[in-house]
Image 1 (cartoon, rainbow, N blue to C red):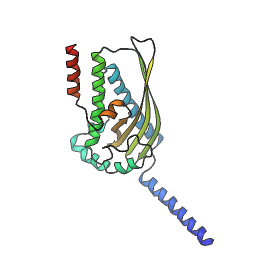
Image 2 (cartoon, rainbow, N blue to C red):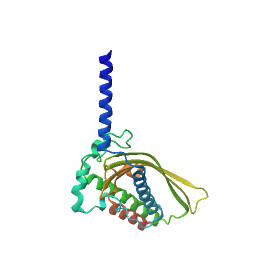
Image 3 (cartoon, rainbow, N blue to C red):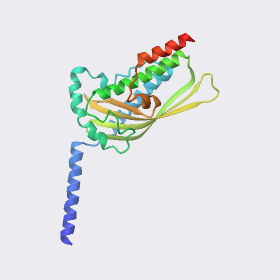
Image 4 (cartoon, rainbow, N blue to C red):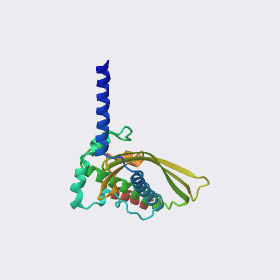
Length: 224
C-alpha cells in the first residue's frame, strides 16, 4: 500500500513539474495582452465590415502578416513551425482540415488575400447597386482565446445590425469567426481569417479571381 501511495505521489509530482515546465516555456498571456489581441481583431473586422457594406476606404493589409516585408518573412516561417501542433491541440476548430494546417507561409497569405477579395467584391456589388442604410451597427462577442508562445487563435461572433434605406424593418447577420494571430516585432498580427461566411466556405479551397468576377458583373450590368 505504501509503495502504491509513493508511486502515486511521484506521478503527481511529475505532472506538477511538467505543468510548471510547460508554463515556463509557454507562459500564460496577461489580461492586457489578451485585450490587445482581441482589440486588434475586432477593429480589423469592424473596418472590413465598413468597407464591405458601406464601401468605406480600408487597409486590410496593415495589422496582418501580409504587411511584413519580404526580407523579414524568414522569421515568420520560423515562428510558423509551431503552428500545426498548436492548431491540432485546439478542440473547437471550425475547419480542422484545411490548407492552413501547415508551417508554410503561402497558404496564410492566400487566406488573407481571399478575405480582402471578399470585402472588395461585396463592396463593388453594394456600390454598383446603390445600396444604402438607415443605420449599420457591428458588435463582437469573444467566445474563447487560446495562446501558446507567439501564436494565438481567437474565436468570436460578429453581429451586424442594420436597416436598408428602402426597408421598413431592421435586419441582422451573424458570422462566426476564427482568427489566427502571430506575434512579430513585439505586436500581434493577424495570420488567418476563417469563418462560416458563405463566400469563405465556397472559395477557401477553390480560390477566387476578383478581377474576372467583377468584370463579369460589370458586363452583365452593361447588357441590361
